[in-house]
Length: 231
Figure (tube, rainbow, N blue to C red):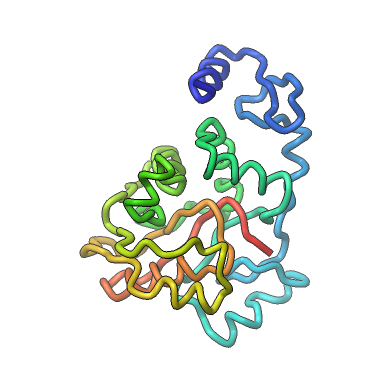
């Protein structure tokens, strides 16, 4: 119902209530301009994993210098800190689909000035059991909207998660990598350049495993695109 009310309000250009400060505003998204300024940009970041770096003279972080990830670039503009942390948790765990347009806008902020070089968007898949529990895949919802705006394909069924791993938030980075081994499957990929879409990148283990599998299927380049980067 909240999603329907939000969409009707936007279509009729009626005042909306900001979900953060609860004040009326006339923006076309659910966050007012003042609250949007509270989001924290990453600034200079590693070109592979988007980990913040001291300044723009550094292009790659120490970890990626030692071990380059399977994905080729991370597109994200904001830190996973308040208030964005709360918004992403609401979207992901409490069915706050009315935030989808705002979160997609944050992802578009991360695009380079030139047109995005990809042939399709692929949302990071959920295991069917987790999908039934949550009711929707937040990555798929973002992918469908972004693909429509960019006029590129969105492939929802090329990749699947076949092992219902323990939640990644509950394990460390080494355990995450072990946890994800053999967890994903991919069909034959008819593209050379693809972009994985997720709401958040933490260690990058999930994207790394998916990118590894996609490249085994012949994909030449895999980028990762998300709303925020955990620091």
